[in-house]
Amino acid sequence: MSGLPKCPKCGSEYAYEDGTMLVCPECAHEWPKDAPVATEDIKVVRDSNGNVLADGDTVTVIKDLKVKGSSSVVKVGTKVKNIRLVEGDHDIDCKIDGIGAMQLKSEFVKKI
Image (tube, rainbow, N blue to C red):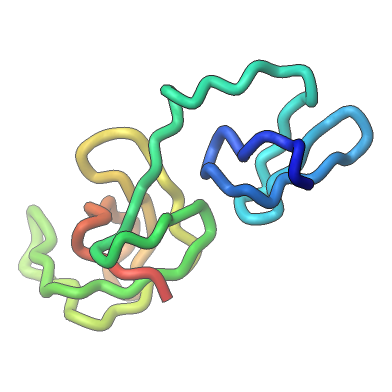
């Protein structure tokens, strides 16, 4: 494991070989062994405490968030399961029970 590159998607050090591919056990990203690793393109998304977030993580909302265009509020402590990381200002795409599909900023959540 010491000679293998880090995951290009999440930066994990725990990549392993699977035939002609390398696999990341943390984010399930697969890439060819001979593919060049471009470290400048890696965007690491962190929660309010600095923990690295990945697709499929479960997070908790740390601040009451108003839902734009509605009178609903996402309360502190709301658990959000199976997040998906996306590009843009709001970098988390998720579904919240009772509200529906939403996008959140990573600065307002913490990883469980």
